[in-house]
Image 1 (cartoon, rainbow, N blue to C red):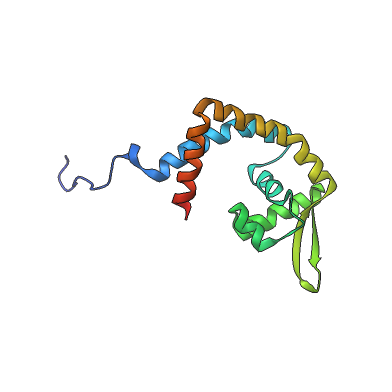
Image 2 (cartoon, rainbow, N blue to C red):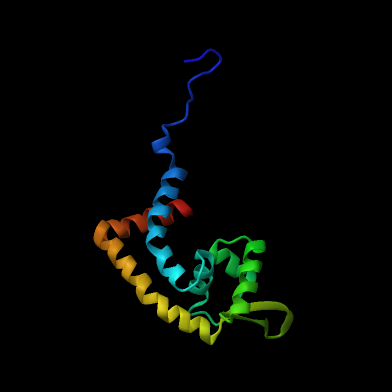
Length: 146
């Protein structure tokens, strides 16, 4: 050891939870990115579409919370998505100051195109890992996120 340097009390880098989660995220997302690229979407745009699908509308703050996107980023993403015609902004009934977002017809059509491909990747991942381990993984990640 060089003089002046002391050994760290931190665990080994391979046992670094944030890095392990990032490695796992990258491994998973590398399977989905080609699908998104094929349809001209970013990961964040797909998150928005997924979050809005099946909803009658979400306020932008609720959408930010659900998609884990920061408000300034989400604002830019939604502007682009509105320009593409994938989402629509509308006033909350009874309160014109509040705004909600919902998928447009073309946003629903885009979801319908991508969803089967996405589900196919989920099935492949489950085949690789095993259904029981996937259930356990979701349970552990949800417990960790509390």
